[in-house]
Length: 269
Image 1 (cartoon, helix red, strand yellow):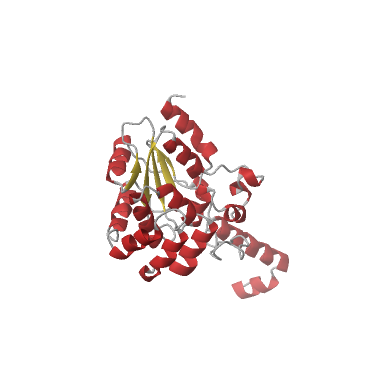
Image 2: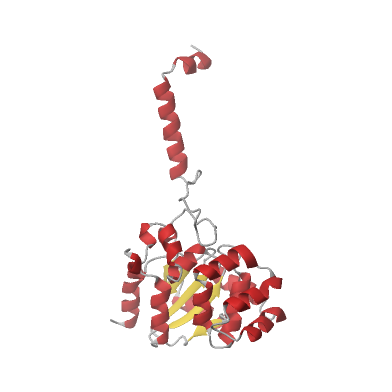
């Protein structure tokens, strides 16, 4: 019997079953992607379907490499003499970076139950908020490094450089990572330098908006973006978010619960 006749005489259930199995294999392998229902995201920007909390390949990086990246970063607090040095590689327009801050709780909910914040009845502890506490109480040194994990974060990153000049990094950071900030960067600004006033207005409660706009318009940090990208690539990082706690990498929006043992080990607790 030729192949055409074989197909025609094969029971429909067998054919359908084969198709279902084939599609399942493609989905499991990532060839076909099925995303969550997310029409209501803060910026109408789909939350990535791949979970960033368990990426299979972790970069192997030495503590010396972490210290070098720290020293060469633009935004940093503390020095390399601390027992704990934390690097965050991020993009203000990246949804999972926003999720990791805990400043956009609706986005956390939309990403699924594993990312729902404790305050909203979930189990997720936003790592960036906990890292900020460690930095402010003097337990850790910290550097923030940009790499384009989502594509619309250039103006937001330059605003963070400018806000850092004013000693207002965390305040500006939290506003950019809020629902309003996420929406502004992804739906309005989109790296458009002519929209500097929109960014300055968003951050006006945290920084001197006129000074910030002047800083953005000057172009002084245009070249710094690629420098940060180079630092991230030197650490084996091309996506966001990613964290290093000393030489221990966490490439994804891990809960702080997953990082806590590395923190305690570094601090000798």
